[in-house]
Image 1 (spheres, rainbow, N blue to C red):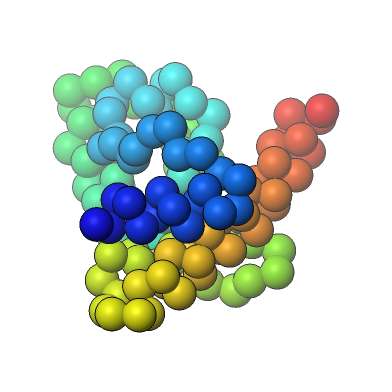
Image 2 (image 1 turned 30 degrees about the vertical axis):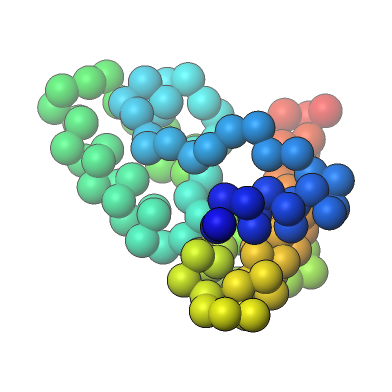
Length: 121
């Protein structure tokens, strides 16, 4: 039900969801220029994993500069993180999915602007 609901909410906006999130992996810290968390708990869990991996893997010294919270790129909305719409109840669930999509659309535009500036594109 939930998967269908978020797929339908996205589809109404012309967004086709083709993947799912996955846990951070040690190689990601070398592979990606941007490591983006959705909310505070997510960021804390990533930091906990990185601290554990430090003695086991080659963790780049600049890994902290690659990490950010998705909503820090929002231009129109103010939020401390992307809320989890799965915990909304009843008719509020569709509103919750739309709120998440609004935040992510706004943040994606801001993230693209940040990347263009950061990479001088």
